Length: 374
Image 1 (cartoon, one colour):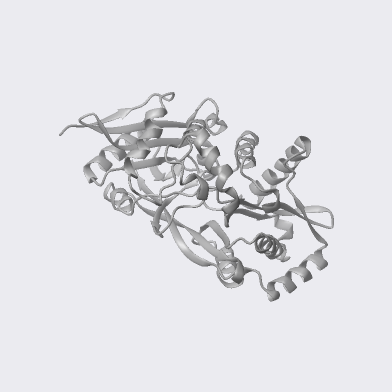
Image 2 (cartoon, rainbow, N blue to C red):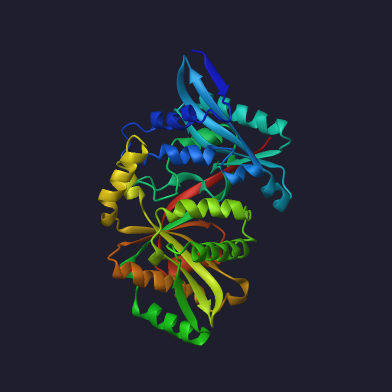
């Protein structure tokens, strides 16, 4: 049977997006994406990421039927910052057939070579600031918002195509009953009194104030994560693009800024796990997605801790712990069962230690990035 790898035009995103439905039939843990959101993410004229990046989509077809897909991605800001010549892959889906996976990766690698790249890394969809990593451990439930999900055999296909592990990313489940305790509360009170710490919710209603808050979050995010492996600062346009999306699902009680004696010190961003609603939206349609969001949102009992950032001059003051304790207090008040804290680099000892020892978090999912030379 003939196998054909077809390169898609940048504007031809619909068949690439809808191909994903072919690989998860009958899988109760898969959360269909909103087709409109995927189109916006892949739109190289709209998404500001593509002002310094490029993406090429490929479909694998056998006798006219789609049997796989992949995207090859360049990210020049990454290479400038890290002095690399790395290309990336993302949006990988494939039947359990090594020959199909090999053909997809061969196409992606060839395209990246033409772009002057010396290595390939992924999956990133389409960057480390978006959905990142392949799920390799913890397949017993649906993913939380903005985290990936895939069949277990994908890691074998990727390894079979010549890529090896480069970094693992951890996800922790932190249960409210373990998280919110008297000892942590007392320590947090001491830290807050010593450092004059107050918390201010992100303002979602006042446009001018929201704009100022977004600028504050961007500056903290870019500063706090600057030295992390693989991190690339987001441009103003990229951060605004992301903030506009998150604003649609955000709860201001779970997104707040910490100030020390009136000076911004850090922030915490958590969002309700709206995947609880969207897992029922089998078509990926916008109207049906809104229906499920409106009718099921009050039943959400989990949040995802996406970002906790403290500026360098406030590190080792305990303000990070005070932020954790404050979100725990709010989660308990709202009768949430807990939070997924994700993702954390496997070698980020401080964060991993804090989540396991202080927060009593349980490492329950692992995501992996793969790499090979071209």
